[in-house]
Length: 370
Image 1 (cartoon, rainbow, N blue to C red):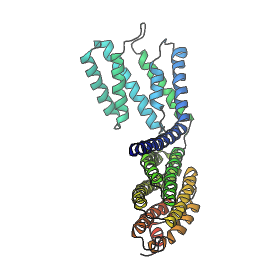
Image 2: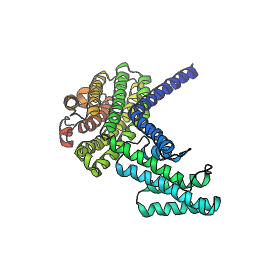
Image 3: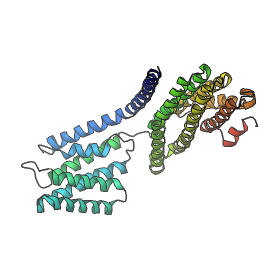
Image 4: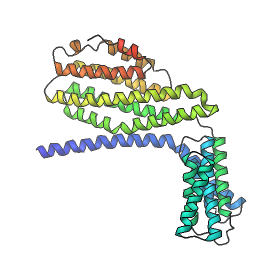
């Protein structure tokens, strides 16, 4: 019986984990499919230019340069694309030069990598150009030239691919807020789902529901990490790109919000662990379950606002109402274990209030004094 129950719990945990991973995967695909399509079309176009315009039978490095320069990254600033395109072209040129002068072999491979990397470091301080120069130089020395190819045909192909990539980056301006907003909605939605599950577990006094909530919280951490990373990259880009500076304030707020939501998720995981122990010890927390359901609904409102960059006023007002009622003696009466859960919820609500636009002082002043 015990083994069967353990097996069922393991299956349920796996199902929760897979569901969270699938949701995160779908969010990444939705966020990236248009960028992947653009880079794929650019690679095909570069191949066509290399074959039908330049006249090379196998313009291998034209699509390589286009794809490497664009890829599926949202950071398509002209500087970044130019760095990657230049890195490919430098590596191909260095490799072609070495192969035609001294042939290919182990020591030639080491020499061309050394020269390409030094040239990359001389031209630019960033790592991207140097990395691509080295990789493409290795490919050139290790890949035999096609019969009838000229001494610098592969370099010409790389220049063609880089030029196509630059044209695509120039002609398809990208709103730097779009991707962080999508990731924000997905990450905050995961937190809201976890809080709904904790509220349900407390209402039903169900350890299984609370275990599922804890698993959801653990599986959601990559979504929060990805959102924070994306917001930071977009904020840095907005500081550097003149055309995107008008979005700088919103993107910097996104970074702050992502940090606060990460803190809230960690608090929620602690809450779920403590709630599971409280329920296992036979304590009831129906009133706290109702409070947490209101917190979860406010987090739903916060997710909706994050998707559009709107002021999360509805979430803030709901959370302020909840905060005013978070007196441990009122919510939990004389049950000290449930009171300890209320204290955790107070900390969680403060983080969510700050994420919804309240100042730290406003968030703390909304709580009843202990």
